[in-house]
Image: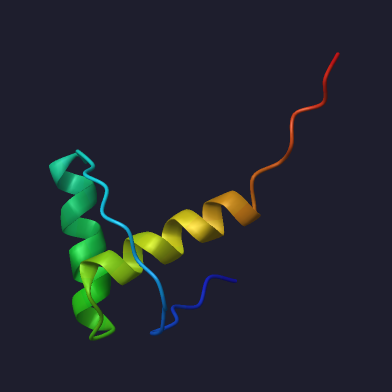
Length: 58
């Protein structure tokens, strides 16, 4: 289950271009949870990485 956290320690800047509809959805989620857009994006990426199946080398 994906649960939003509110704390992080160290940051580094990186620019991303995202589709507007995705930005709108993430911003809505951030607003609903009184969090920054950035914190929600970080947690979405962490969740995706932790739940990505590893490819087997053939």
